[in-house]
Length: 126
Image 1 (cartoon, rainbow, N blue to C red):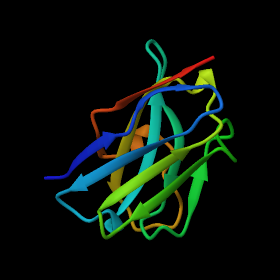
Image 2: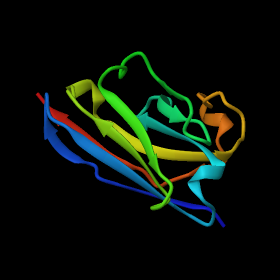
Image 3: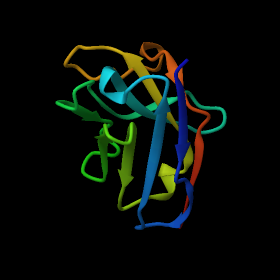
């Protein structure tokens, strides 16, 4: 059984940084295409960024390009989302997602993912 657990959320001032972690169990992250999404109450879950199964490709939402970076540590079976230059509009619950996908393209839609973490709150104050 695949389990994803996010951590690293919290409260930060605008301009600050946070690093979210997504620890996977049940299967190695190297066999997954991984993604990060975020959701505000009353809004749809929004793609933030993703990484292909072999780490060869990454993709990001326009709103976070140049500020957020996804990386994977296969030895720790963990995927990270480094968030810099945070803005108040980045405030949301952030979710980690995974799907067994050996393609080279990043999965950018929520329905394309099979496994989800419980989410971690990120709050950016102005």
